[in-house]
Length: 157
Image (cartoon, rainbow, N blue to C red; front, side):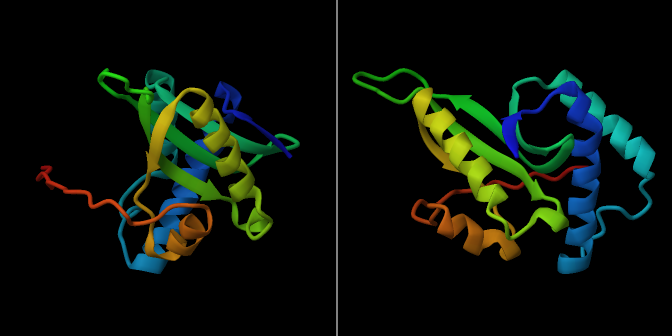
């Protein structure tokens, strides 16, 4: 298993993984992510998004050309402050491991790789919004609900 940055050759697999993730959410949480959505149209749009938004650091676990696990990291630069050591905070999103690769510590290995990378670039913290099904995994990997986040939901038409 090779943990590395995603490459453009991986984009279709990443789009398909996002589709699978939404399929699971539809089942597990009774959501309607895929209702009325054409799969190929979504995949095309997802690939275009990745091509246009290079600011995401996408880490993958590659098993002989199969993307087994993927995690997206978005870095938010911190404004400078006197004696400030940290340069960034990081948003971890789109975390997904293919079903056949689960319970093999692959996700934890990718996350540990990400943590080392973020430490090297002086990132202060990682935040994420885990699903109900994944909160135990996040807790096992050092995440906690210590800080309170205030949200302001916006209405999208």
